[in-house]
Each structure stands twice: as C-alpha cells, then as structure tokens.
Image 1 (cartoon, rainbow, N blue to C red):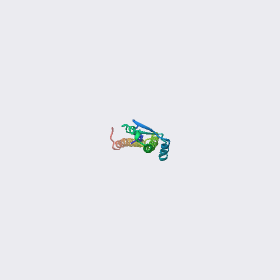
Image 2 (cartoon, helix red, strand yellow; image 1 turned 90 degrees about the vertical axis):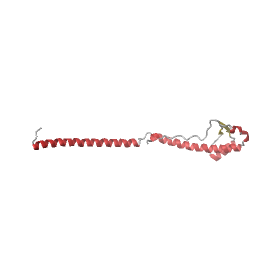
Image 3 (spheres, one colour; image 1 turned 30 degrees about the horizontal axis):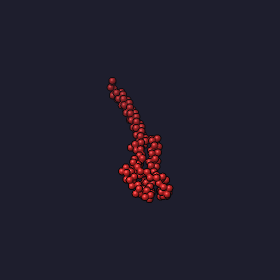
Image 4 (cartoon, rainbow, N blue to C red; image 1 turned 60 degrees about the horizontal axis):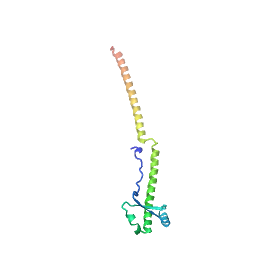
Length: 147
C-alpha cells in the first residue's frame, strides 16, 4: 500500500455545540479553571439540544458550572493534543508525498532487471542462430552436400 493512500484524518470534536447554552465564567471561576487545567476559559459552552441546562440555570450554583468548566477544559485540552498530533502526522504525510514510493522504486528496478535479462537472452539466441548457421555451412562443406 502506498503512503499516498493513508492520509491522516483529524480527530472528531468531542462536544456538539450545534445547540448550546453559554455560561460566562466569573474571574474567580476562570482562575480555578486555569489553575486546574492550564486553559484560559472565559465562557463555558454546554451542548443543550434538549434545553435542560437552560431550564435548570436558576437551580445551579456557580460551583456546578466551575466543575463543568474544568471537565470541559480537560476534554478540550485532550482534543488540542490529539489535533496537534494530527497536524504533525499530516505534515509528515505531506512531506512523504515528495519522496519516491518504495513500491514504485521496486517495480522500476524489477522492470530494468527484466529488460536486461530479456536483452541478454535475445543476444544469446541470436548467437546460437549464427552458430547453427555456421555449423550447417561447415557440415555442407564437410559432407559435400550442395544447396
């Protein structure tokens, strides 16, 4: 299989934000998320296709959202690491496109060897034909046959 056929694919986004609820984090929540995960987050984006987060907004405490923000930051950090690995693999794959395909190089060497062998065999049989013609002429002279 050629390396040209196995292009790396990006990782799938771990969160579906098509329908979402956005929660702006307080400076204190931002500091906690930064300390726990190393990620700067101003807004927590929650996938909310069923509307549960929006409905329960008043029942939730800031600590609930801090915990969710930390979880999301860790998930996004993992995604960023996977995406970085994808970009490195993609760059390596693109660089390999400029290199000759080892399978093509092998086929080329086999083709050259086959052509050389065919030429050598052709030359051998041409020499055999000439040797047979010469032997026939010698035999005609030696045995006195004409024509």
